[in-house]
Image (cartoon, rainbow, N blue to C red; front, side):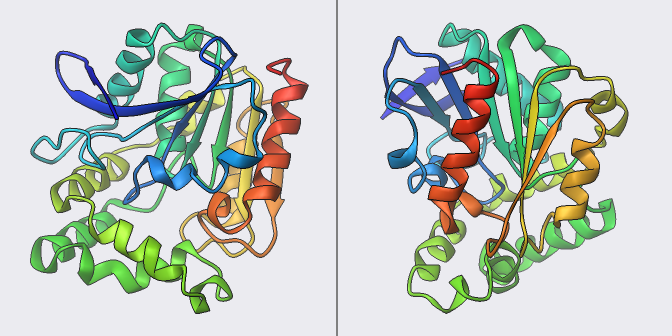
Length: 262
């Protein structure tokens, strides 16, 4: 385990692969930690410098008092990459991680060669929806939302497997304050205008069974960026890197090759 003391926050991160290879950075979804990408790693090229981290309020990273802003989450990612002396990376963000990716690209394009917007959008939901979720967690903890979250995260097929309990447990063991804080950040974010001004290679990935960010929503965000690519993974929900890691790795590897990153 490694901690980066960024001054304003201590962030837990992990590096795998070749420390001298081209950097591939992953930012995970709301309610998960860096273990989200574990199923994917065995299928990725070995010569990459793979960096994963727990965003604030999740995993082993510090959990400040909520609410959080998206600007703070972007600042955390920016400071971590500067701390690790990362330049010219490909940044992969899933769900809220994809919003962080958009904000980072707008603010610090020098850090990124390309980005992957996975199961995300320029705007996710409405403030009233997020207010209801925050209130539910205040009353009953993340447990109060766990069943409905599982239904949005995973396909009906996956929900019948024993593996579902692993991901439900990972969700409910995230700090309530961190979940509420990041929910507030999503609620206050609308990247439609800034994202439409981006000009960098972009891959958008959607799951056909995604109940949180349906394929059409992901495609609409991809269409904001000229020249972007869109890929649909069938039979997967909001976390296709969990349900279909080989398919996900194939799509990601082809994109890395297309932008000269491998």
